[in-house]
Length: 306
Ligand code: PMV
Image (tube, rainbow, N blue to C red; front, side, top):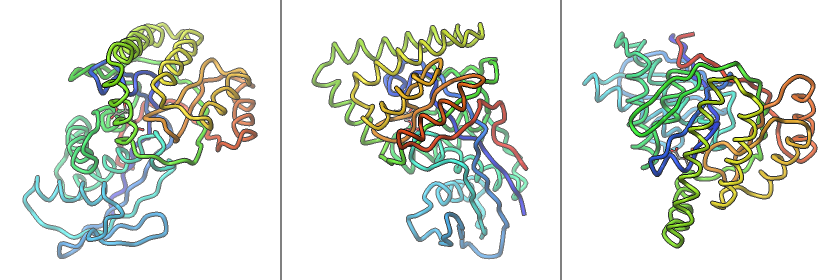
């Protein structure tokens, strides 16, 4: 039996703008998806997760099944497998659970079959799997979950940034949504107001560029300010919601340096950066306002054999 895991992520800056070629910064967090694999005779792939045990004729565990198919194609051999998934990440809420499950499954299969794939190769294959399953995806999620840490994504260029380990508090609204629907909504807004939306997208790009400097300097106050500016710009793209804003304002009132959504928006999660006694206060405020607080921190650990 092989056990692997991969981290979730938050978008510190730049979601949505990254779809239009602007840079973004995403950070791996210390909440992970765990995959265990036992190869077996035949060709049947059976997945156990969330109290269900299903084979891949079923549409339920699409990322795991697509990852297994991709590995079968790559090594031109058929195999059967029992795959068990456990996750510390709420699904479809902007924390990169799809990428983490894809990447941890690819790594566990690679280890089981002696393929020896490395993190950057896994990231590339993982991105192909995400594109196959959901049609559109930037490389951010699959790259960050593969290599860990804080990653700047700028077109085809990527750069791992040195960073201070920072505590964060995530607030989950529990509302799931489809990333591609929210991307389409922004695209429609851009078609209707090309100049306005175009300049909002460029401004988000500038926030990311200045955010990179603040990260390198370790300026937490500056990072928080830029997170709040980024949130204002995302709000003007109409991707935030009443529930998210309620948690964001609560976190700021409880002393967070900054707070914003992570990922597509339209539901899902927000997160805040805070220190010391403020961490507990932010978590309590999120709970009071109907969210599920998850205390976490940035993590340098990408996909790993456990
Ligand atoms: O909600 P998520 O984690 O799927 O993030 C989507 C972020 C977008 O920038 C809107 C799209 C992308 O692929 O980067």
